Amino acid sequence: MIEPVEMVPLHFGALHPYELAVTLLLAFGPFAVLAIVIAVRRRRDARAADRGSEADRR
Image (tube, rainbow, N blue to C red; front, side, top):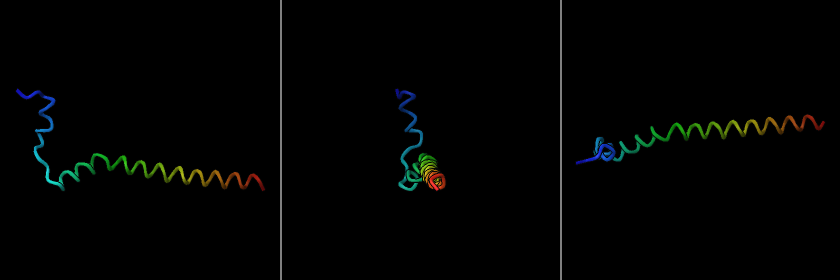
């Protein structure tokens, strides 16, 4: 008899390549977008901090 844990992957059956791509995009896409947003914001904050420290020197 199939255990319930083993049954989960069988529930979906075989996926076509495009279905697999869409599934992976939906699963990991938001995390990739979040990582990009964090990187851009950190870069902006670092530039603002550099500009602030240059203004303090004058």
